[in-house]
Image (cartoon, rainbow, N blue to C red; front, side):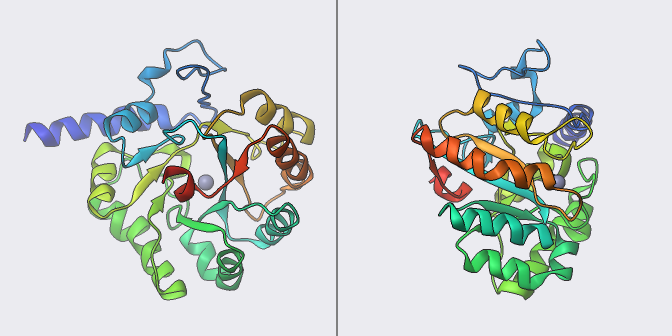
Length: 254
Ligand SMILES: [Zn+2]
């Protein structure tokens, strides 16, 4: 009973913070959010990563000069543009796919996999599911997306990225029991925010915050991605020029 109450409490806390779309977590020695002076150790993402060190990650836990580029909200036609850029640069990335998009564009998803990229689960409909019961979370969103993956690829992903970073501790524990890791990020490029973002700013964010074993958040959804697409080759060039290797999330974590 106490456990149930504790979980409910954590759900509320996680949602309260997870709703802030502008939340940024960057690593400078420990972790410092550049947009606030808040003690980032209060961040639920970091708390969860500390509490479940083998199952929840905001970045790699080693100190190698490797980083993981991640692209959320596809597959879409933009995924093909991103994939072309990655191919030219001989770089591998991780794509967190939305189940409903996977139903629309299974061939694009298969192509991404054939190109050597890793694929992860990003919910069924980009759901605000952090407040849902574990049953609903699984049957109406994450588990259903695993089923779509299974039908498409005959295999299921081992990585889940919660939309908006919203996930309850109970859901994290549930995924952990299924062998699914929860993956946040340590550099948010904010590429989705096209009203304030441009190509130059995107590059600057990566340059300023690049660190060993970073997980970098970007988006390849079907909407306007022109800044991200324009910035991506330079971002990859910069990362490589600093001696970093681009790897998939599972490679980074292993
Ligand atoms: Zn997303």
